[in-house]
Image (cartoon, rainbow over all chains, first blue to last red; front, top):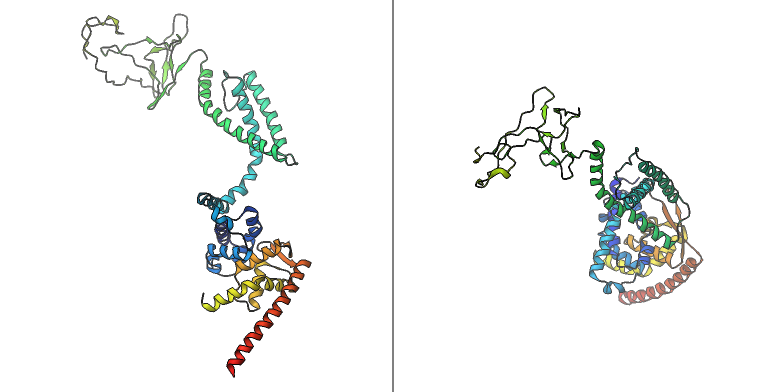
Length: 317
Length: 117
């Protein structure tokens, strides 16, 4: 029985021999080497040391093969050294153990790709034909559009698997076309996925509060859960109403703290009056952070234009 | 490799085709077995790569047929056997060899006789 060690010894040795003969025309090399591995395995199965001990260095073995086979050496001189290196490298890669492992593993993934590409095609088409639609990895079941997307995905997967399972091999030109199509799907999807991050983000926020944009800017330090406004002279302000550029109230992310909103005359909670009154989950009130105020330039004679609610001619800290 | 081995290797090169054909004429065989049988018959210095390369060349030249025999332990074996063309080639080469070796023996005997007297 051939052990794993022997198998890798055979693979390495055979790859080196192939590399040394990489200048042969492909058909000649194939005719000469097609069962080199089987032959080497036969030798490896006999008791004895590694192949390079028994057969000599692979390069020498290759030269002996070349001589015995009477292979042409003419195009060796003509060959571009770079091309020669490239072929050697290719022979080394295709002869290596991990390459063969990946090659033998990939066909098993084919059905998975059939399913995936069906899903991806619909994703690409959705992205291409409905620019405003909040594209997510999973279609939104709540909308007509999302249901249509799911239905289309099912049909696409069914078709894709049918195409994948066909018995008849394609003729050469169609084959090239089919491979190109698969590669194209994989390529375009990378771009769509790149955009999806922003799509998905706005979508999640959008569903959380449709008419209120959440002030969700995630700074490096973490999410914003409260805002503490101060006047120019460093006095804490209370019940400051914040709105965005479209006039929508700005709210912050919910934190573990319990927020009590002031209730307006119409009975609705006012969610954008800052700072929010918050209590930690253990009941302690959330206290304002200690802040460092920016040094203002020399005070102007008329501070009326500032945001200060209690104007003072010379701000003191 | 000493001088004697080198000489033998050089000599073998010319007659390896004949030796391989002769081994296969006895019985169909696979690559490594051909090497082994050649060595058993006293051709100690026959190189594995030389035999493998020769087998492939003879096969490509249409002198051999080949078939794969599955083996339970170890790799499948590709057996080679002589076809009509191979048998003709063997007969032809054997004749050539016979006349060549006769001539050479004659020459060598004459030389050794001349010196031995």
